[in-house]
Amino acid sequence: MNETGYGKLYITATPIGNLGDMSPRAVEVLKEAELIAAEDTRNTIKLLNHFEIKTPMTSYHEFNRFDKADELVEKMLEGTDVAIVTDAGTPCISDPGEVLVQKCVEAGIEVTSIPGPSAVITALTLSGFSVRRFVFEGFLPPKQKKRDRKEAIDRIRNETGTIVLYEAPHRLKETLKELAGVFGSERRIAMCREMTKKHEEVIRTTIGEAAEREPRGEYVLVIEGKSLEAINEEIKAGFEDMSLEEHLEQYISKGMDKKAAMKAVANDRGLSKRDVYNALER
Image 1 (tube, rainbow, N blue to C red):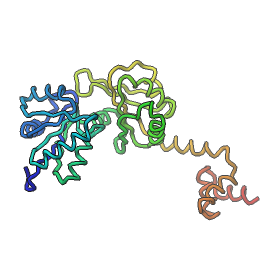
Image 2: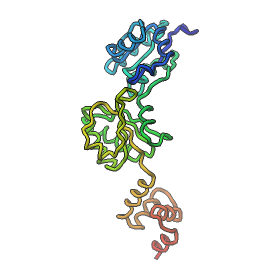
Image 3: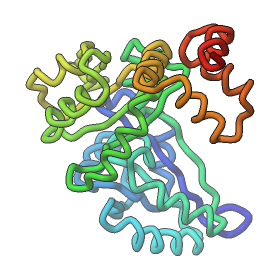
Image 4: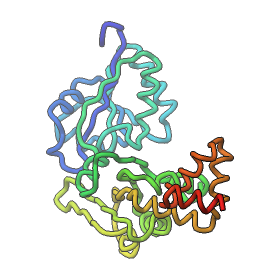
C-alpha cells in the first residue's frame, strides 16, 4: 500500500519456456503480492509451485477481462497489491492485461512493470533482420472478419520496418499462403518456435517456401520489411499506364502549381525536368 492508501498493480513478466529466465525480482513480487491475476491458473500454478510461491490466484483472461478488471480495481482501491501474469512472457502484449492497466490508470492506481522475457523481442533478435524499426501486429484478425483481416494485411504489406506476427498452429499454413500472395513469395521470413527451450527452432527462409512446409506448433513470424527499391519500382510501374498529362493533372488537382507538379512528375518517373517540360509543352 502506498501513501494514497491504494494497492498497486505489478505487471510481472514470466518465462516463455525456460524457467531459468525467471528473474529474482519477479519471484519476490509474486511472493509479496496479496493476489495474482493469472491468464490460466492451471499453467501458473506450475510456475508458482516451482518457486514455492503460495500467493492466492484469481483467473483473469480474454473472456472476463472487463468485469474482472473492475473487480480487481476495487480490490486495489481497498489496498490490495495485485500482480498480473500471462501464460508466458510479458502481460499486455497481445494479452487482456492491457484492459486492467488502462482501468488502473483511470482510477489513479499506481502501476509498475517487472521486466523480463518477451516472445516478440526474442524472435526479433533471433531473426537476423534489421531491429532498428519494427512493427508488432500480434494475431491477424480471423478469416471470418474478412474486412478487418484485409485491412491489417494491407496496412503492413509496404512496411519498411521488420514485421512481427503471432499465429495459431491450425491457421499457420493458410496464413503463410495468404501472406505469400500479398507480400510476394520471395520476401524473407524467420519462423521461431520453442524459444528458450531445449528444442528451440528458427527457420529462415522465404514466405513462399515457408508456405510449402508442414510447420507444427505455435510460431512467431518475423518478416523482413519491404525495401525502398521495391516500393519505388512499384510506384514507377503504376505510372506506366498513365500519360504524362494525366500524371501532371493528378498533382495539380491536389493544389500543386504547374512548375512543382512537373518536378514531381519528373521525380516519379526518373526523368529530367527538361524532358518532362518538352514533352508536355510541345
